[in-house]
Length: 162
Image (tube, rainbow, N blue to C red; front, side, top):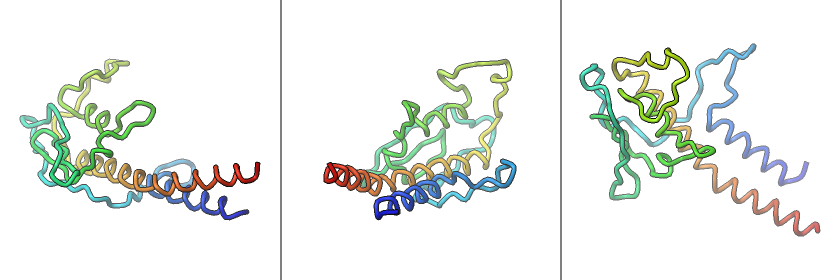
């Protein structure tokens, strides 16, 4: 195995660890995912009563380039715009996750009457899950420079071999 393969294998392990992927017990049952704690924190709790269940969310830019993710009356910070806008195949991960947990989700495909069953309030579990989503995306984005560097070295090696 050459140096590029070793660097690629190490980088793959880093991405795998950053996303919490693969932390599954025997026979496919999930265990507690070990998500690396990121920078984002719950700066102001989302109220957990039904009267204040969030209707909307937004990202507000801060003075240092990071911003605040406002969820109803709650807030999470710091949240980089790159995290808030993170996409996989056109799906904005944070925005999609939040939209499904709003009082009245917008543009959600309904596949059965079960889709009408909605939570009645924001829960502490939602807050924990949202922080995990933010932290996983932070860790994933943090691997981008190493991924880019590895790709450039692989391309250079292929070109030199030609």
